[in-house]
Image (tube, rainbow, N blue to C red):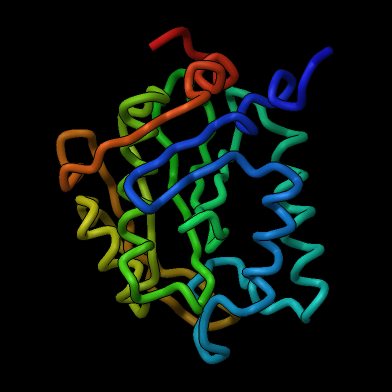
Length: 217
């Protein structure tokens, strides 16, 4: 009989890098992630996200978070996908790390995005999880370039990107909740990734490679 991982290989993806673990978002992990979101992600006066999804009322935030991840599963295909993983420390979910891309078999690029529960910030977890995730994308899933972006008034996110090795590109002028905001573009290549001697233990990557339209590594 088929398993859930057979029909949706990202469920079987697992990456261990020291104390950091990245795992495919099963329903159980989605619920844990919803609990983390409900406990808070940022100060009420701040907005680090382009889409202000984190400001939804209590209860609705959990439903929105779960529905978002369920919708990404249902539309996942090689030419348009979002691969989101749960981030765990000591077996406890603390946030999410993902990448979104279109036409991946041709472009081999995607944009990373992540968030951590407010209670887990300021401990170096953001840098460690992004570094591990980028190593996974380059070394195991066929990415040749990774992009990202952060508002210029979000120094914490920009600091993580700098430590991982992203280089700044252009600054975009966009509307954020009806006001002008400057968004700093970033790009990372395998040569620029600051690995910091991180060693990955990876399970399930070969099945995911096939799922995103690539052959064996």
